[in-house]
Image (cartoon, rainbow, N blue to C red; front, side, top):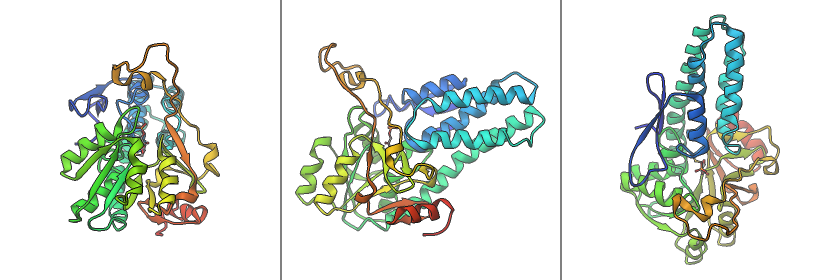
Length: 347
Ligand code: MRU
């Protein structure tokens, strides 16, 4: 089962807002519907929204009625802008859209139908590659997880956050499938509760031992000596190794340092943005305060109470032991190791 896929002229995806109560799929037939599904988090997780955007652009090409190649490219530019604007932090979205737009702008296609086919093939390839890359990355990362380890994890980085398999939770899965006895402490991850709703659902499917913990309990478990390693995902990694991930990651990194607990992010090279020298330049999405005051429609404070809702924070690279990629584990100094990883060189 894939989180997002092409379905005969439409984009089909799991509606992640309904989990863990219902496993439902939506079938989207316009690029606008795909952009909205990214914005409203029907699909979420950096690699999953990259794949969704790729299919969204392929869909836009098929829906455009024109027989003129220049007019088609003009339509695609507008769709590309709409998709990229859906969520700003995860670079995978822009990475996937730009990859397809380079094909459109290559000058190789005079016939619009040939370009439409090439874009769909490229979107399919992004999705297929994501699955292969994640399982390669997971096997590399699994070496960090000792038999008997308790892993602390934030947000959801499993199959649902990708096309399949997952990043940080992919490492957990690979360690489990290798026969290691592991336990996972899942931060519930307010306000959207990706940890308690989605990561716990995935652990249930796999049969991995876990407990959901309140985000505020992470320090308690670290201080009590229960946490052996912390694994998180990333939405964008800057050239120096600073990375944006789900809000709450930064404070985990600081506490990990205080308690000498190894702290790693797991991210495919499509999440690495070498154009940004440091995390200061990563755009941080600010979401609707209603997600804080009224999570999933449940009003927990009076309507006029004020709230703020930054969706991501930036963790400075100095807190990281390493960045697990599909090409190996990048170690400090990240400016060098990340360049090698992105160039596809073994680390
Ligand atoms: O807001 P979300 O749920 O899209 O945030 C997801 C995360 O922060 C993940 O940790 C990140 O995308 C990496 S997942 C493979």
